Amino acid sequence: MSSFNILSIAGTDPSGGAGIQADLKAFSALGGYGMSVVTALVAQTTTGVTEVLDVPPEFVTSQLDTLLGDVRVDAVKIGMLSTTGVIEAVAGAIDRHGLTRIVLDPVMVAKSGDRLLAADAIEAVRSELLPRADLITPNLPEAADLLGEPEAVDLDGMRAQAERLVKLGARRVLLKGGHLDGENSTDLLVGPEGEAETFTAARVATDNTHGTGCTLSSAIAALRPQRATWSQAVGDAKRYLTEALRRADELEVGHGKGPVHHFHAWW
Ligand SMILES: Nc1ncnc2c1ncn2[C@@H]1O[C@H](COP(=O)(O)OP(=O)(O)O)[C@@H](O)[C@H]1O
Ligand SMILES: Cc1ncc(COP(=O)(O)OP(=O)(O)O)c(N)n1
Image 1 (cartoon, rainbow, N blue to C red):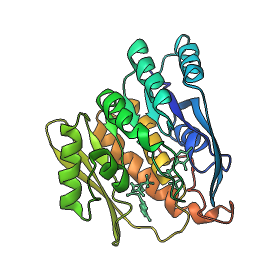
Image 2 (cartoon, rainbow, N blue to C red):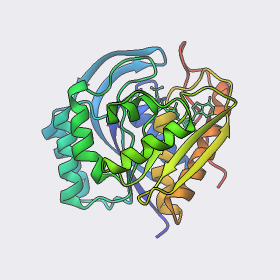
Image 3 (cartoon, rainbow, N blue to C red):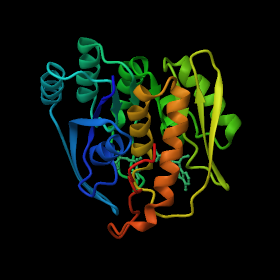
């Protein structure tokens, strides 16, 4: 098979830096054929979110069943889900259609501080989606919220929390360390048997970090069908994201935290 269909289930970002728009750019940049199911319409840009319109769960189901009745999907990235009803709709579709290679970015709060997941929907992420995903990619605050604990402050703390997320039902956890300080930005992958691997890149000095999490999880989904293991897909996705951050200052988008540059990859 030489063509891979990658699906994003997520919310929108009219400024194109995060959400479905960023996901589709990353899929395309990395050789995937991008498709999308919208969960929430978000009025947002580089400076923050002004309003969210949730898509009714029945219509999320309708989009998924219509698409999956026709098209083979080779990998899925799940991002902003907004409500418990939407989470249940997505979990139902995963089971009905036997979706595999699922990357769950458990999006909760944007960098601007605006909520993208209702506080009462965190339990549904834990119970409905953690066990159905092949890989979850929380940042430090998201891992802490899923566990009901304070945020990790170093790599040892990250490892302990990633292991607890596996015990909670996640198959694999990529705990992202972008919110820590230091000259490097290190993410930690913990697998089903507790095996751990770190992915480190030199920290890029830029304010243009809008959409880093969306881009990384989408890059992993796009690359997974093209790589032999999750570890290889994560390593190449991290290299892509780091270069996208390095090139972010080439763009002139908005007055806040600008987007990373979804350049077309060299491989
Ligand atoms: N300034 C930076 N330089 C290099 N990598 C970064 C930088 N900021 C974040 N990252 C990387 O971007 C990805 C997303 O990180 P993080 O900020 O932790 O998550 P989120 O965007 O979901 O809040 C991770 O791979 C992290 O290591
Ligand atoms: C629709 C939508 N989904 C997710 C995010 C969060 O994106 P992320 O990659 O974590 O980047 P920031 O927005 O936090 O910079 C979003 N903003 N919108």
